[in-house]
Image 1 (tube, one colour):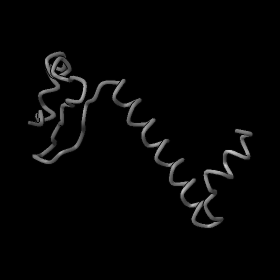
Image 2 (cartoon, one colour):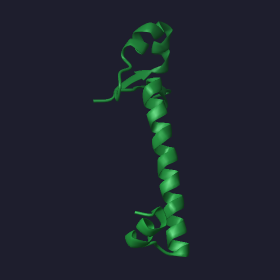
Image 3 (cartoon, rainbow, N blue to C red):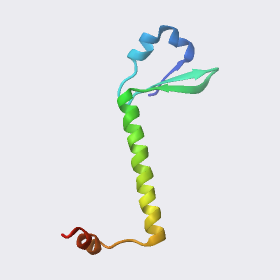
Image 4 (cartoon, rainbow, N blue to C red):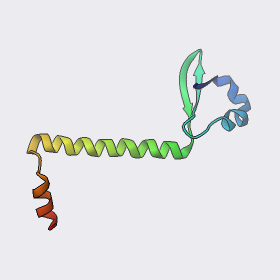
Amino acid sequence: MPNIKPISDLRNYTEVLSEVKENSPVYLTRNGRGEYAIIKLEELDRLKSTIRLLAKLEEGEKSAREEGWISADDVEAMLGL
């Protein structure tokens, strides 16, 4: 279940921060609407890495669609395997 709190709870920020866990962010609302999420730095780094990986995979797929796919045999030959 998501941990959702009003932003006014940040007056006691140590309590709010103690509730932030790996894969369990604290969501903050302003005027009843979602506004912020507090996550662990490790999780932020993992999310950024995932986004970079997905962007690189998309580049590769776009290249393959435009220029054609390379067969496994061709890759092995290029690598000298």
